[in-house]
Image (cartoon, rainbow, N blue to C red):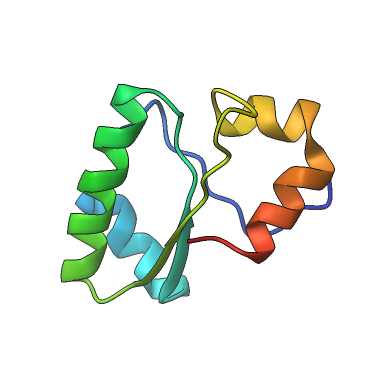
Length: 88
């Protein structure tokens, strides 16, 4: 799919330890979680934890296009890549 520098977490469980490891490699992060209630809560938690570690953060919002990042990549790759270029 030619998408580089990706880290996947199981479910919606992004931990402080995972963010600490990621911080060693970059200070910038774009979050793309499921488009359901659990994904929304995961985004809030991830932003809260990442703010404490002074990450430059972005969030992908694919609206009604897909339910999760995997589905978006498999079914709407071009749109996914466009959204990566302009996260919120």
